[in-house]
Structure formats: structure tokens, C-alpha cells
Length: 109
Length: 113
Image 1: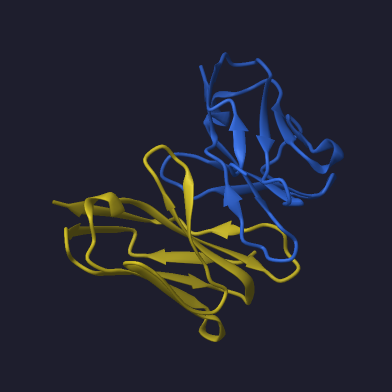
Image 2: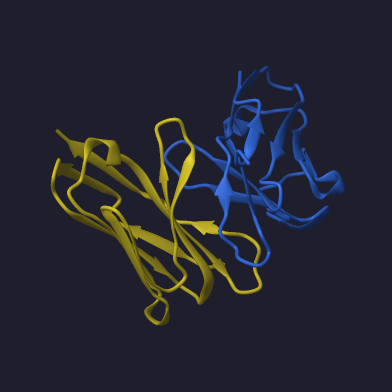
């Protein structure tokens, strides 16, 4: 099956710092999503981005499908950004979205 | 529309008992997924429905697990003869066929004692 690798596994920042999270995948995909898992376990949709670049406030994401990676940028981080960020991909003609192991982000005040 | 809804939010059961979880997807979504997540791991795919048809099942879905989606609306996931290793968060998601962006419910946290 498709492999999804996220880096770094853990990231500790001071409030106000910027960060870049990476997701590498091993095959062509028709779906790529970034999620933030809140402390209660719910997965919050950040971006649906199988290709291209999107921005939403302090967050932006870029997927380079031909090179099989995606990046999530967080600018001016806040303590509320803390949590686990997951990348998930779905291959063409497959119906199971595969998740990476996540990046645990801690933003300190 | 209030998003994907799961019930119950928490379930504590004794080993050997059967449990059933319910998922109500977003109303116009015809794709429905079940995932399982253990502590410190990413969600793992269990099974997938398109309308009422169960089209894909993971090897993780042992014969103690069964899922249904009658009439292509809500879905249930039943675990028979629960084991301590079944303790996990069970997540449900839904999407449209036309675009595959998936939305997740709040999950059901199962603890088997």
C-alpha cells in the first residue's frame, strides 16, 4: 500500500514562531488532506489539497504532486495551534485514505 | 447540517461483551468510512461504504467486527466478544463521490476492562 511519512515527529516552538511540516507519499494520489487533531480527538479539516497551494489565515499548504510531497506552513504560531497534525492521502481507484503518523506540535507561551 | 455525528462519545465495557457504535454522516454524502486510532498513532482504515454497499474492508477488521449501512444513511459498527486490544478511538468520516474531501465525526472512545 501507499506509504505516508510525516516530519518532524515532534516540534516545539515559542509563540510567534513559524514552522513547516512535511508529508511525503510513495504513489500518485487524487486526494490529500491536512488535519489538526484537537485535545478531544476530533480531526479538524485544514486543507483539501491534492495539488497546488492554498491559504487560510495563518496557515497555508502546498502540494507538489509530481514530486509526491506536501508542506503545511504555520506562521505566527499560537498556543492554540498545539496538537497533532496529520496528513492523509488517497490513491486513484482506492477507497481507503491512509494517514501518516502525525507531527505533534507544542507551542509554548 | 451539523456535520458527522457519532454515538456514543464514550463506552466502557467488560471484556467479552458486545458493543455497537453509530455514525450519522453528512446528509448528502454517499461515502462513509470507519477508522480506528490507538494512542500515539494515526487513524487506521477499517472499512468503506458507498451508499449501502460495503466496498472495502481492511485486514484489521477481524470476524468479530461487522459494519452495516442500511439504506445508505447511518452506519453501525459492532464489535463482538470485545478484547482489551479493541480499546481505541473509533472514527467515522463521510465524503461525496464527486470530490473526496472527508469530514470526521468526534469519535467514540472505547475502553475494554
